[in-house]
Length: 351
Image 1 (cartoon, rainbow, N blue to C red):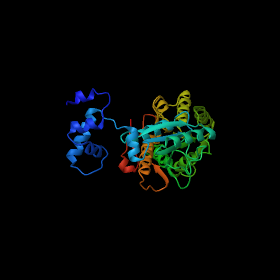
Image 2: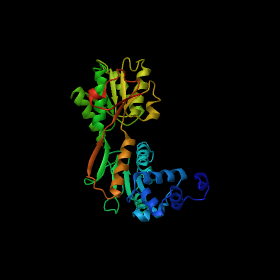
Image 3: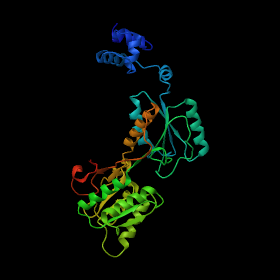
Image 4: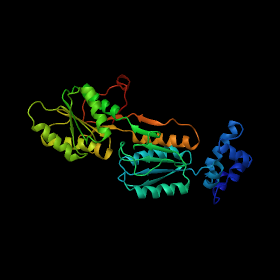
């Protein structure tokens, strides 16, 4: 039977795969599940046949065989999706080739709603839960301890004995400020968000570790308006003006760039500006396009997906906080020349 003839069937079954591949149903099943003893050529032939036929394993039968649901829940209170969407994209990439589906539940900051979604995940018997949010120093308003499935925390605070993934804010900030120093900037100011955020403190400490303890840090809201206001404050003061501004997020940086333009100050010729987050709808639309620190949230999601799979398969995973490196994405707003990441020991991307 030709592939095309079989493909016309209403549903491709494992019996069809076995017949076309010239093996028994048992051998076909073992080949597709990477179990049993057979030659590598046979296993490859069966898999290629299945792919050509468009064979899709019956999810329920596979779940019964493996004692798994092949679904993972993603809980978040980031209803805007600024941080959750790239994390989810990474999770999905890590799981799709394993035949695992992801479903997203937005719980806002509502504990009762969180419990409803967790109960639904328990009913579905998900293989695991990935908890994510909008800041690394706040827990979701729902208790995930003592659940009968593994939990991984990504870009949100988890219990001390949990597996928690966060971006390395200090490393990202250090990369940005070192770039500005290498570009010849002497008077760098850090305009950032509220002091109550752990990430703000980590970035500010990294900033001062490069420029010195006298380095000036201005705190305010996470907004363009604050960036605009900070420039007004700095340029109204007597004395030398900054020749670089390192910002705590891209919204602040955009406000800084706009305020500098209004004063006739050319970015980056007179003042370099660097943001944090690499939120492309802001950084790419800024004029000039904004250099920014990318927190690699998609990679963080991939790692969360990989770990939840290992836990679902019963593999041991050491608990603790894991920091993933950030990446400096260089655009026109900072000036300077491209450097080698090998020389500086960091991660760099130029666009």
